[in-house]
Image 1 (tube, rainbow, N blue to C red):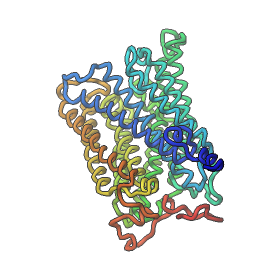
Image 2 (image 1 turned 60 degrees about the vertical axis):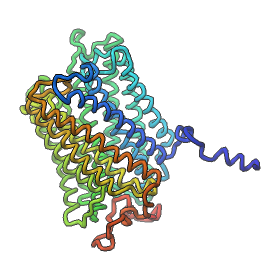
Image 3 (image 1 turned 135 degrees about the vertical axis):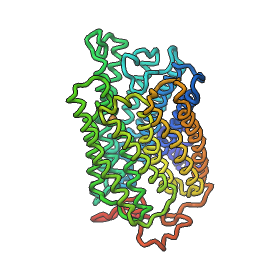
Image 4 (image 1 turned 180 degrees about the horizontal axis):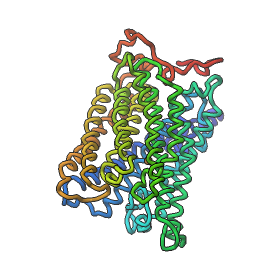
Length: 533
Ligand code: CU
């Protein structure tokens, strides 16, 4: 081997783990984020199975109540910060540079750091399960004084939330800098694919509210260890203040998890309806309106805490106002499909499932936002049913849609369509078996975060638990399809993935693929940075 060759060898891609540890490539990091989130979804999913096993039947104790409480807390933290958010950050890494015609994300080293913080944060959080006093068990909202009862796990919890926040904020800064500075010439903001728009707005929300959560948990920490009394009435503090601060973060957090989902669905539906997205600019403005409104509605989580009537009225009307821009979006998706030449491949099925089931979550949200009614539903299983409709057939279905839609582009292999459809239909059936009965449980008065219940709630809890285990098992179909596709087991994907899809007579369809999809970049005014293919 000549000297030059040896030198070259040194600069080639490093083998194994070091290649992934050091990578600054947006596709590598996108893949890492997505794989990490899949692992966290599995861990968080197993925790939810512990919860549903405990609630399978009344009376029986499957785990002890303290551990049950830890499971509700940890399940939420793993799913929100480990599953949904990193998954959308992974998609942002993979898609935004390509959709903008940028060479990479603007800050590649920050990008690497933002990802590698996450395994450390979740390793720390997971380690609390083995600590004296057990894992955090005060619910994911960490309300004092209950959360103060957490033992040695408390500083680990707080520091891991700080790390998750740093990771999210670096990801958000990267998205903003990339979108504002690295768009190809001619790629005006109002020509960007909607996924870029929804992520841009999400990124501003993240920067606005993640530090607020960091502040809230830091105050919990100093109250417990450094003698402050921010939230302790005995020292002149106010436990309700924690709730205000937490929900100032917590409500926008809901939109952080759903706005990128809106972007995904807004790009997939036009492809399979073969029409341009209806109301592109109204989609952008509706997204911005939802984000702005999301920071003035926080106290709708606190109606039962004893707010002044004027405040209850304000937060009720403000919260209901959000349904207007959300309604604009649902209208636009439906109008996009109206008289389109639709086909129903797996990504489209998951997108349609998203629109219908997310809307059910929206409607139950409207019910909860009615102050007098909320006094009845507050802290009941109705709330659990509501936010799981928003987050599972909402955010998670959009992630499935995105993975099926772009996986052929990422891997060069077409996933198995039959397995994809089977995955969709079983998921849709079981997610409703899992969560729909919880509405009835809540209306009948079953409280959330309770490890046992009276006999009257037995049937609906039984149904819900059966649905949970069946839904979890169904995901192995997805896992199998995903792994075999990544290994190239199925047919090669064509250049124009969705035009070349098997079994679809695309030439027979009256209209071509629309703009604002990944398949075809929008018209650029001066020159195209990449030929489309
Ligand atoms: Cu809210």
